[in-house]
Image: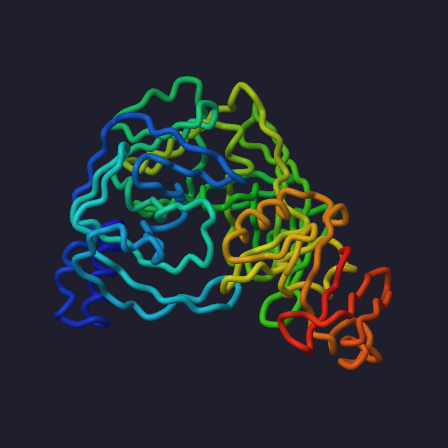
Length: 399
């Protein structure tokens, strides 16, 4: 299966990109990858596995190897192929390239004539260089030790004390496993790039959910809903656990993620297509899902998600100030961190620049907005002093 996968990639690259890029095509699946054998420490930040070891990467078993384009100047790129564009989950298209790097090396691995995807990363406040994914571990065995926060690539292992997971499909790169959830059997991809416990397609979620709560975000000027439910997962006859399950209309594939995986140690055998797991000695809290969430987009801090129906009207608006501190390019990451770590945004003084015509009340005109008065609407204050952004925008405070 893996040989066929690489062969199809070669055909695609050749047909789409022509003979001038045949060098890159020949390198696909033929990179020189070696591991030091040493354990690499990782940091778990917001259920994302950060491997900081000279060249810093996220560990994402659901993705190929990636270099973020804003980090590409740190590498010796010898060739590239433009593969068109990719559509992100928010509907935005991003440039999609493959690049050849002479050598990528850190304390964990070395890749010569390395082929990486070059992908836009709108914001990476953690300063990571990219992603190490399933391509790195072909014919290897990956140990993910959440108890000691280490990963290691090895040739052989002892599975004593571990239990085997039922792998339903493995193509040399991605693992799909069978898991019982609320007395239903679900097939899901093992994805350490997913920070949540379990993401389910809407049709699978409706089969297994009993009670659900909601959060909201905006996409293509339309409000969409995230459905959440706490469910029982029976990994084995002797192991039962609960997991926070999320779903919405955009999810096309079921994914097991780090919020669940972090309470187990894992053996991912890319040689034989097997997975083993055992519980860690100490349980970490689960249920990761920020009710209110801010993201950075196009150099601005955006109110992206909320679990409060009264705040839906502010989604996709720019957050211009928090606790009387104006947002600037230099402090966006710091203020975003404050917002996303604060459970109740009502404890913060948040100002949002909004179009006055959309300010919850049709009688609130631009002339009124420039009057310097404060108007109370549905328990939200609209501070009508002129904004420094635009005469047609005001400030909504005290979310």
